Image 1 (cartoon, rainbow, N blue to C red):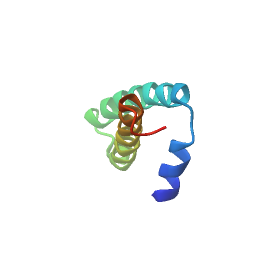
Image 2: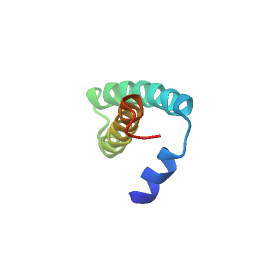
Image 3: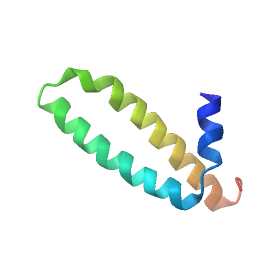
Image 4: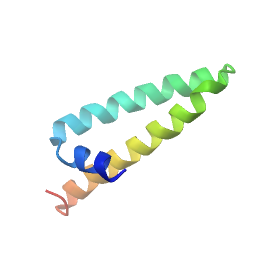
Length: 68
């Protein structure tokens, strides 16, 4: 996990915003699939939600000036 976080920290803010939008779209589609009965998507939903939370946290830290 720490390696993933370091990789995310090295990305530019614009890239993070773009990735955030991609994850939101992907989560919408995965949740729709889950509602239709596809149970294979549960693990992927969980991992994408965690990645989205990491990105949002990092973007907020940059906004506050905590993170460079």
